[in-house]
Image 1 (spheres, rainbow, N blue to C red):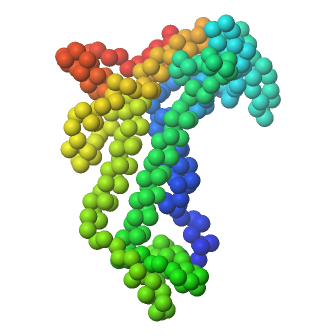
Image 2 (image 1 turned 90 degrees about the horizontal axis):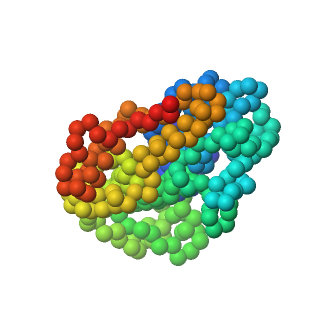
Image 3 (image 1 turned 90 degrees about the vertical axis):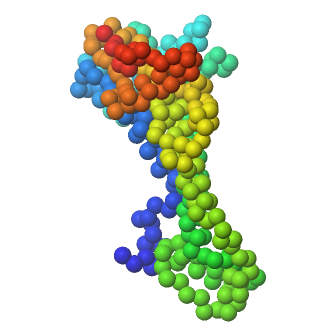
Length: 318
């Protein structure tokens, strides 16, 4: 399909636009997080995806009964006790309408981590991963925008300098065609002279391109490492020292095991209140990575490898 104008390009994902890149990476990273855990034993009225979505995005999932069936929806926690723990939850849903719930009485809450309230403002805080995911989505979008612009600029041997508006308009149209991959021809002598103004250094082009790609892969590896999952390192990254690659392994802000334990305790409360048998565990595809991360941490802390058979990665809320 020939791209002839800007309207036709609406179907293309413009990697150079950071805002579009943030949206792309946010949902991609969110999908990774949603796949880390598996929840079993849920009734049909309570989809695992909805429970995990609430946990990941808001840091909690309130489970209650509506018309005799267990359900969950996005809720706001409030009315904190002496220790700044929420005692009530409220929601508004087009199907469930709106209601106030009493936690521990007619509903139970499952937390993603131990940050349940703000002791300074006595307000609920976003203890989910939305901010965490957004942070890395922005970094990855910035890198890929740089990569996209750099790839387009590599098609040139010089940057233009426009001295008049007419020359500027011609150059903008030239770049539009260049970005779209169209064959662009310059016939105006003044525009041709403008392109001779600033020569582009042709050296180390491949190195610069590799540096950008490595930066993207390293940021993605940092995202997984902050969660507690070790990612395969690119070849060039393997040239880094062990200290550089694992410098912040012991300073993990978020860890899959910590989140797992908090969810296990939460589902134990749900099981007790509603006579269910809900369990949560780390998905099989991530178990090996988590165990390897634990072994590396234990080896660094004790100087000895972790014995076989240790490091349970499943949690039962029985």
